[in-house]
Image 1 (cartoon, rainbow, N blue to C red):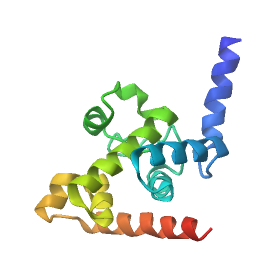
Image 2 (image 1 turned 30 degrees about the horizontal axis):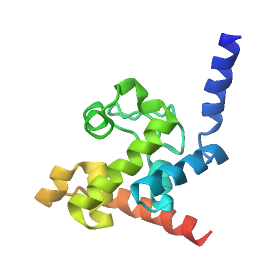
Image 3 (image 1 turned 60 degrees about the vertical axis):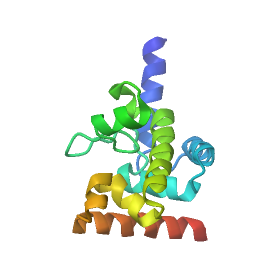
Amino acid sequence: MRRAAYLVLLLGAAFACGHVPQDLWAKTWHYARAWGVDPYLVAAVVWVESGYCPQAVGRAGEVGLGQFMPGTWQRVAGAPVEWRAHPDWALWAVAKHLRELWEATRDWRLALAAYNAGLGAVRRGAIPASTQRYVERVLSVYRAWRRG
C-alpha cells in the first residue's frame, strides 16, 4: 500500500510537467498572496523555471519548481535541500524570494533578474544577456496569463 501511494504521488508530480495542475495553481495563488506578490508573476517564474515540473533538475544543480540552488534554498527557505522538489515548499519559497528581491530592488524587472543571476550581479550592474532574455520570457508569460 505504501509503495502504491508513493507511485501515485510520483506519477502525479510527473503529470504536472508542461501544464499547471489545478492544485498547484491554487497553491501558487495561496503562497503568492501570503507574500504580497502577484500570483501571475509567481506562476510565470515557475513556468519559465520548470514548466511546473516538481522534479525538474537544471544543468547547474537547480531543483524543483523554483529551480533553487542549495545555497539560495538555505537562505530563502531555511529548510533541508531535499525539500526543494516538494511543491508546497517550492511555491512558498518562490513567492518569498520574489518578495525579498523586490524589497531589495524596488523594481520587478530587477527582482526577476536577481532571481536568475543573483542580487549581487544586479547590484553590480552585471546582468548577463541570458538573464535579460529570462526576464523578458517571464514577463511575456506573465502578460499572457494576465490577459487570460
